[in-house]
Amino acid sequence: MKRWLRLLISRVQSHSSLPVPLEEREGKSCLGYGFHFLENSGREFRWSRRFFGFYVEDAPVREVALLLNAPQQFTLSAWVDDTAVETKALGVGEQIVTLRPRRKGGAGARHIAFALDRTWRPPEDSRNLGVMLLGLRVTTDRNIVCYTPAALSHNATKSNWQQCQAHFEPRTKPARPAGSNAEVNLAERGAAVERVKSSPLKLYLEVAWLCNLRCPSCFHAYVPATQRKAAIHFMSPHLFRQIAEQLFSGAMMVWYNGNGETLLHPNAEAILHASRDYSFVPALLTSGSLFTERNMRLLVEGGFFLSVSVDSPEPRDFERLRAGARFDKLTAALGYLVELNRSIRNPRFNLRMQCVAQQSNLHQLADLVRWAHAYEAREVQFLPLQNFGHFSDYLEQSKLQHTPENANRQMLAAIRAGTALGVRVRPFPPFNPDPALEREFRDSIEENLHASRSIDGLYRPLARMAEHPSNNADRKCFMAWSECFIGVDGNVAPCDMYLDVTTVGNLYDNNFWDIWNGPQMAQMRRTVNSHPEALCRFGTCMFRN
Image 1 (tube, one colour):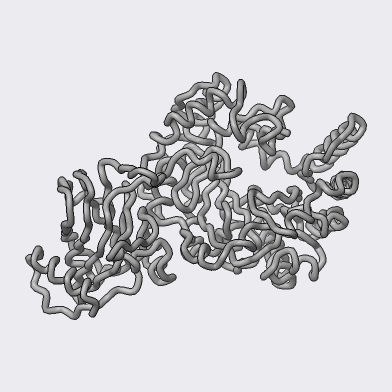
Image 2 (cartoon, rainbow, N blue to C red):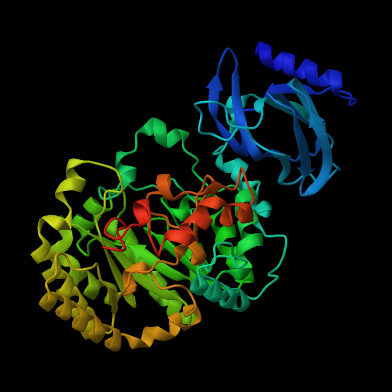
């Protein structure tokens, strides 16, 4: 056994009143949250954030001891499964915090949560830091398990996640109707108030950052393996439950997607199922590569707005542009989805296809609309390829800006194909349009809106949500009042474009309302539509060109 591990056991035993005639072993992984990457300055450690915690197997748990080093004096509060158990003052230096949970059934995982009264920031370090985490010791009826800092993991194992299933269920039911929150939100954004009482009407939850595909149009194709391994892959139970309990009751729409594949999350079904207790419209963007009969039924019965990423209706091109996916598997799943929807007949369920338009599929846009119609998709959305700060020969050569006339012509053909079939087409904006082309696009879109008006009823419940700036003639933006992106790592942003710039806080450092009414949000609300700054400027923001 490692020397440090023996030292931890002996130190904790000296603080423990429990007899320890148990087997001692080193734990391979413990699922946790709210800490930074592994560091080593003579010994391994992780810096905590303000809010951090762990999920430990209940076998049953008799005692939990955390070995830490406090660089400053702090007040530390601790909870076990949402029950406050201790608040203590931490002096400077190395020390042990010992908790003895009440006995429970011995199934699943116990949630051990900690909160510091504040964080601090050292010189030349942009991170918010708490205490140094040096080790965790868990005593159960069967054994003693000691976890090194390296074993404290945001990702852990699939088994660790599955033991946490119950911790994704919100503990409180909706407290405020979404309609009343929407009225307040509408008034606040109309008055351009800087501090708000309403919560966002549209949420984007990055449930998973990890993706199983390597599409050449996406940054995941260019992420180094070491960076991928070190990244936080999935949203923690603590973070998801906090968001659900604070924000779901006021939301009108919740998109379960960000930079990864949501259905990769080991607890994806529990996360998606939680939407049934609320009135908002649930929405999911997925590649469809992980569809199963079980999760497709959940999506149809739950009345999801389901958006499936498809960049080509041709098998060979599809598998090139969605590298790692199989065309025959997707078409089989979509066929099953059609039959399932016909039998369940959920009027709110809406299937649409989403396509990243690029040079190699421009000639297929109209065909994709016709293909989508065959699977009873009611909408097709086209997005122009963007590099979002990543650079490669493929991304550069595939931009539509290189052939603006062809891009405009193919987009018009796709809109008209949708009009003939009654499919709503959401086009990318025309490139370098003259007045005649602008009129042609506008007229074609109006014809398409009329031909596909049967879908309008699905969007009526969302009427009080803010219009997207690209759909406003004056390009006004109300995201700072009405929309919120929350990343898998806890980052909060009113806009999910260029998150390194638009992020305004982190839920592992502060509570949501301190962030949402903080100085950065007040500044954005004050300037975004009068004298916009940085990325929000007209001509700089991709939605305000």
